[in-house]
Image 1 (cartoon, rainbow, N blue to C red):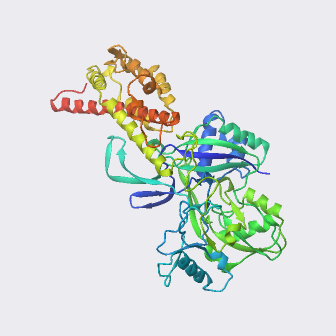
Image 2 (cartoon, helix red, strand yellow):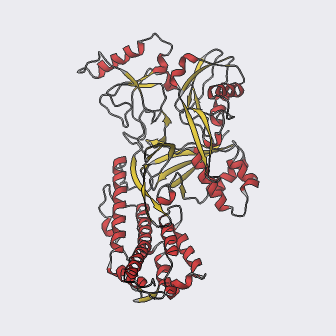
Image 3 (cartoon, rainbow, N blue to C red):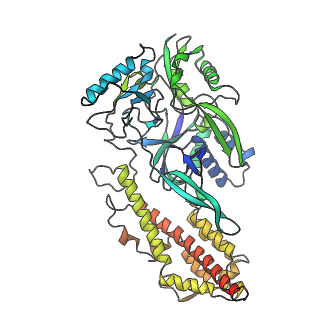
Length: 585
């Protein structure tokens, strides 16, 4: 029996989950978090927690991350509080309609047909039934020339047939010349990113007690995880919540007995690749099914239009080299087989839990055998126990009055943007204050070179402040270690105006920064009055978790902005000195 730890990922920052493709200067991202990214993020956590261990020679590391006994499933978006599935590639909608809806509507439902249910029926029957349904649901519109189009791949809830919506945003960036510390010419690029507050569900599956203990030990006390690309640019931070599960299968994946010669469908819940790198995927899939089911398996080629293949690129961040590209059968594919002898339901259940094919540790090879909804000729959305129209799981820290409806996705996104805007404004107000201006004058009016912190030291602090994968406590620790070394003498000798409330007017820079780099400085010192600006947000009172995230953003922006201001003002002064024919101080 497979055991698992379910992982809920809530995006605190936008997520850049690229698929390896690009169009011009823009990189597009996926609608889910691949299991390979979760594996990589947790492998990095293991290495960080075991600094004295060599992963290449450690049996625990090999068992967790290099074999197939532990599997890291893809993190798919939630709908109504539950994990979704890839939409079957056999679904079609009527052209000029909007396809699978996001929320239940008691009114007229769009016509969604399942072509798999018509594959062995007379040609034209599917269109005739679609035309009839369309005429019943839209009597005022003509049904003479309707056309069926394939549903664009998405994620749906199998019980309600509703589509999960994953909000995205475009962010443009410019490359920075590391030597000149300014923007490079003609180096504009962009990221499509999953918006913050998106929620996904994954699971880590394991078989042995030893692996289970190792997984639980690894996940213990991990509150945040960083996934995806551009983590140093403010992307990728996720809050994680865990749930221990004794018996795990993908929801609605109950297995039934298959008779000899009976045709059965397999829905791929994730991409499938063969165990080796050279076997064509369909040949590999047939071979794996024969091995797992213990009988001859026949692929019915007449049903192949409901499947697709794609190239799976990869990249090894440790080696900084691409992995070999492999051909996969795409998730959502519906493939029809028949068995040479009866297959017991217990065997089918075990295969669905374990997965098939290669790269199972990265979430590949997840299947569902004969799902009931693929026998339906048409889909109509319906309600679930989680309420109407909810496309994301309600997080525990969101404001919610007893007995009230849960905030919608749009409302939660609006609150998140409002908090970010308020945090940005608070940081700007702090940096524009008179006390900070006097502080900057004191730093840059030092005439003794040995009483000035170097630009390199300032840049290091600025970079660490904006790298959300670096815990804020690390800033104070880094600064304390630096003060104990030779470069720290410059901070100790530089006298400045202290901007901290209630402090002495003149203070050495080292003492000011020790106070300022404290992660709780904006919560305890009165530098900003955040509570005054967050009283009336859309949706009610601000939770402690939301307030904490806002204060963290203010602190990071303020530290980064202060260091940047010192560097910029110093360069301006140096240029003015050079213009007068003087020497740099």
